Image (tube, rainbow, N blue to C red):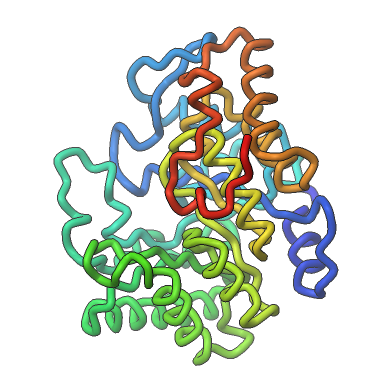
Length: 333
């Protein structure tokens, strides 16, 4: 693997020297830790039509295409899939930074068919062994539910992880999910609650223990600005969430970047796209402020037409902002 673009970008961001082109894009191809057969997403034929679900070999082939494109800065996968990719030399001729998911809290077990895990407060669980880590950068996630017992258990598990990570010389970035229980906090207070939980957590960590960056849900302009301005030394990234429209995808990048986020870590928003490579190209252009979100949607549809791929949605529908939180700051198309 050649030198990592991610390392160069985040070094400039930490120094306060963020510039055009420095926004970091990560492809979260770790869906297999969330469930079984359906997790890798729908199989698509040459015209983009869906038929059944990708097998593990098909999922790995799609990941290799993204790595070869060499546009994303980080490729996140499960430890088992990353091991296969590294052994096959997938990263040898790229500057993509490999990483793997070090834990999988129960609230992300959503792709287990007939599963009911999300109905209960998240519990910590860690399947990957750091003693067998294929690379030295991992993702660790926590979920706060405004429940003292559950939240303390999550923090204790995170402390255990940090001690082990230090033992094996492993760096991590921290994903903090919104509560997975609907009545944990009033919806209007979700951003403030999560922000305060993060600040409280980080206050106890010395530099050697702190995460490389954060990965959080976008809870609106005010919440993002509050978190990114509180401690400029902590780089903040935004997670993608559900698929929705492609306008939602591009709006999420544009709005989060405008309000201080410097990283986008998207899973389903890339994995469910009709053409993932074209989607990544337009995500990067939006992040670099070369185009507005509505222009990116039109450009992406034009690319699909040129490739002979039928879009999942009509252009008029795909230009719609459907996620309520994004409507607060969306510009008219």
